[in-house]
Length: 311
Image (cartoon, rainbow, N blue to C red):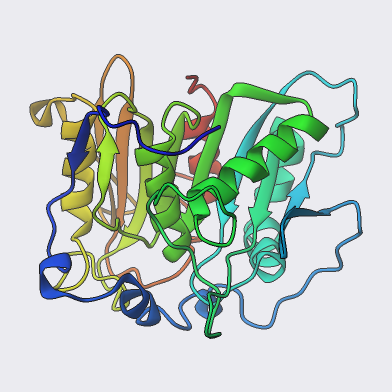
């Protein structure tokens, strides 16, 4: 798929704070250094060669891991797919080990029969930590454009596995969630829903015809990406309001539900074509949440949200 923006594409922009300050995206993402380690400290998983796939273009080779349910075979009915992206400075293997195994996402994938892919972010020229760079710059180069790279990952998965193309989702932690939102902006005709855990959105222009459903989880005591934002990062409620407006939903139709003695709040906006949901954890920090919500883990809540969504 050619990700270049047509000259007449209609777009909508999230209000900008830091671009006017002249702060580079690379510097902003540098501020996230180490946040992925708070999620996957020293956790590793043996990965067979069948789990690891590569995407090569010219001299650049990038990787992703794929996890299929135990019942899957080449004759299986098309399965839903979650592309799940790690945070700044992280890697797919450690992230998969924690999020997949420690939060029971893989157990859930076996039970509900969906596929999860874990792409690796890229170390940019000059070295440093791997990170996701949101935004489609039009370059059809996997080293220069992460939107294009994810498109190539998705094409590779579809060529080798039975995927229900109406049920493809993007999700991520921290910087990975920023990338998921960017995919919703630029490829919302491919991703039926996007969202993130402990994340925010980098301001960019979004295709107005792309209206994916949104799910987010965030803590009020997150000091890496503050819930109420700061001079650098967008406030989480502002990001949700952007998607509500972008998707043509009504702010007046918001439903609020309290869980766990009012320590977790769900704000949800419903529409004919999409839903926007935000789970706020009172006192929650910059982590992948494991606290039960109405008796379900956040991973279960995530899948319950995604399960019936279709393009």
